[in-house]
Length: 79
Image (tube, rainbow, N blue to C red; front, top):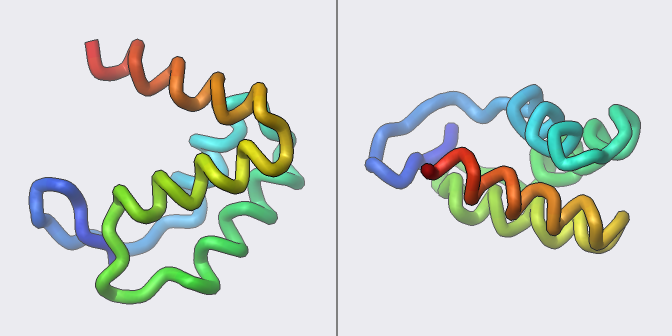
């Protein structure tokens, strides 16, 4: 389970992480690796902001351009 910014609790979804990573340019293999790594550390009290931060760290480690693409997508999505 993860805690959303609104306080709502929903099930943890590796698929959402894979989709987000691939949207930033990561390969499916790398996206699944990142999702699996985050799943190992996620608890029932993990917030979506903590998951976001972990995704950004791992994308940057794999390829800094993917981190930039993820952030750019967020800016467009919020408008």
